[in-house]
Length: 300
Ligand code: HBI
Ligand code: FE
Image 1: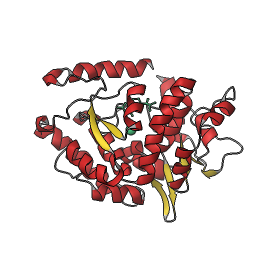
Image 2: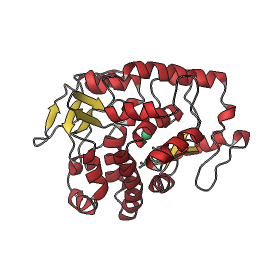
Image 3: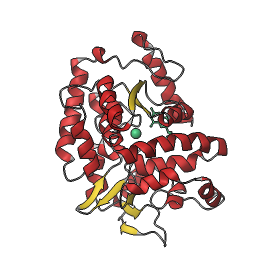
């Protein structure tokens, strides 16, 4: 949690400017009027290349959600306008935050159908990867899926489950489920494998890697397995978990995770790239991409 606090402090400090002091729930004004032409231009660059890439890669629900929202190339979206449309569809709102917020603040928002979105946009030299959620990741990646009633309920349930998991000391287990579904999930559609995770959908390079590269494992989603699997925040995932239908998430939103936490307790945990004997494999990866990275790192 050390890294996260550092990010929070950084953004807390950054948001201190221009009268954007955080409230108790960490929300701030988006300050839409204050975006510069250069910031809108960064959005446009990201929007256009991602919009060219995603047909045939993003799942149908993502495409539909995007189509129905006031999200376009020319400007960073105004959260008030997004919320008007979302509220009517699934009862969600988008609220502005300075960046990462503390876990319990994040869960509290989600449990009340408020999606905290970073109000800042990445710098032109970090178009391809940043660890903190900015407005492009949060709005382009997450908001279209929040137009879908299943995802809408699932993410609310995650917020409620997060508060419970914290009390039980099981946050690490729950966070992995969020990571491998909401952030990096793949969906097996009848016409092929598709992206539904926001971390992939908002990343140009990972949208290609997750679907086309032969390096990562693609493994059928299994709740207890995922709870025990570490993930990477610094690079592409070594394994992606595949659901057969979005309704599987509805099931996850309904069940009590406590017995799964019980079962995972004291069981071994797995590094991100490991394949297990009883995994249902969609595709076993070569592991080449990350093996090369590790080799380069050890030669330095
Ligand atoms: N804050 N703004 C923001 N966005 C996130 O995705 C986020 C966060 N705080 C905590 C957090 N995610 C995760 O570490 C929890 O889901 C466990
Ligand atoms: Fe995210």
